[in-house]
Length: 99
Image (cartoon, rainbow, N blue to C red; front, side, top):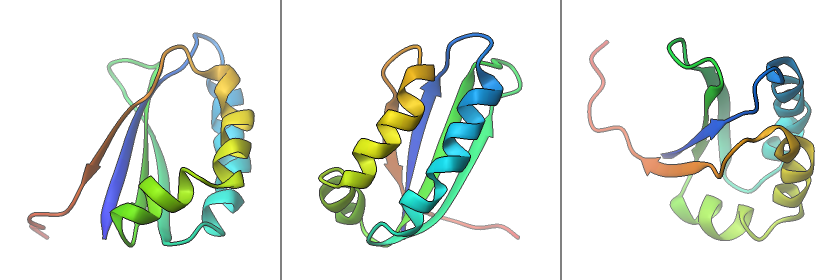
C-alpha cells in the first residue's frame, strides 16, 4: 500500500467549510478503485495548512485510475473553492513501524 499526501493551503476563515467539503467527498474516495483509507490533518503551527492522507493499493490506483475519474472532478468541485494555492502531492510507503 502507498499513501498519497496532499499538502493543501486553504483560504483564511474557511476551515469549517473546507472540512465539510472533504467530509462530503468521502464517498467519492470510498468508491474509487484501490482506495483504502482517508484522513484529513490540520497543522497546529499553520492553521490554514492541511494534509489529506489517502491510502491506495497501488500508485496507479491514484495516478492513473483516480486522476482520470469523474470522482476527481467532483472532489475538485466540492473542495477547490476553499484552496488558496496549488496542492503539493507526494507518494510514500511505510519503511518502518515502531509500535
